Length: 137
Image 1 (spheres, rainbow, N blue to C red):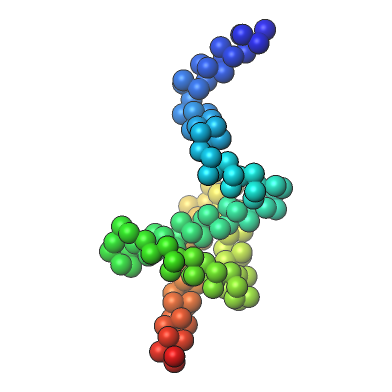
Image 2 (image 1 turned 60 degrees about the horizontal axis):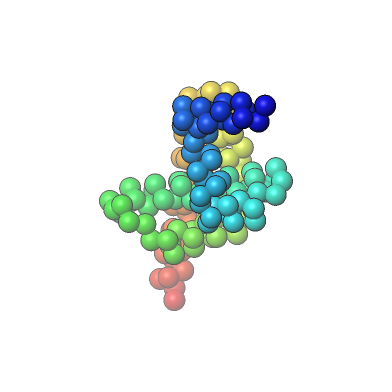
């Protein structure tokens, strides 16, 4: 019986890209597995991690477009994420945008990029505030 199940599993790994990628990620990527085991404990944690991943991706896209560059300044990216999420106003807006993004994904709404636009607006606000702080110092 197990031999038959393994045969079907092998067929899925061969034919299904998603299962192949999933298996590779969980089996061979130690950094991801450590991250997964540490931060994917329950549904609330998972939602939070997904939010941070989407925020990271959004900032990365904006940074590359703004600087016409493929290289991302990781320190600046992490600083922006921390500032956005530490500020009560921007955090609320990001969470609200993320909720709308999730609702739009579930409803196949063509306005799903509104999430990105909201976040980019928040990023620009933080950048302006940070620039003003630097000028004061």
